[in-house]
Length: 304
Image (cartoon, rainbow, N blue to C red; front, side, top):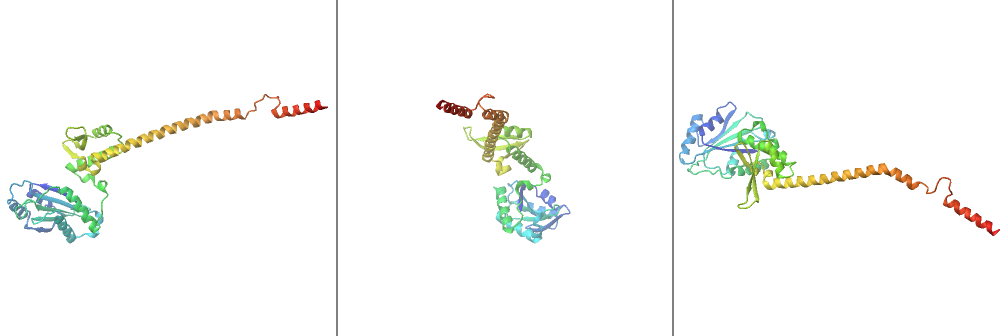
């Protein structure tokens, strides 16, 4: 199970988007009349007046499961999971609406809630995206739902706006970081793809503290795109690539040297071996063994 967190200003627009379609059905609601889109919108806006200074009072979260989890879910179970999710996210004592959409292959629902609580207090959205990821993982593991294999499983064609740009950056940076052996190579390769690299330095020094990437007017910290794209993680990968490249270069030099030695051996080895095996006397001359036999014969002749 994964969650996509959205905040907005207009209940009218959010409710219309979620309900004015054939594939939408209301599974559960609290604090609002579900008689019509107009009534639901009116009820949300009425409570909103308790805290008129809160601009983005619309809470909107999309909860999605894998298509592989269809047999483990039904309307009642999805509502239970949504309520458990809200409790863990501290979305409590406020109006909410749970709407199911069936326009995708995977089960998913939309949770709309009022960030102005029943007592007029603001339901915080601080660190909400981080907490959302943690809560979704907890529920996924608790009930044995399918755990997607990271960003590789995300359908890029369904993405829009900043999410689309974020995944474009992710794919590009991942591909470039696999081969870059220094930061200059990474920057130049990303620039060709329309992505600029920005460094954050420790105040008054040239020590890099963090990194961000931008495409057009959209900018993300490396760790916001993915934890593996923080400055420290990327720097480790670049250092590894550099060392690996040096080892490959050294191995290539050794291979060339060995090949030269083999070639030298093939060229001169046979002739050198034949020279060593040649007798050191001229043709027709006596060998050392034959000279020794001659001397012995001469000695015997003198004795007579």
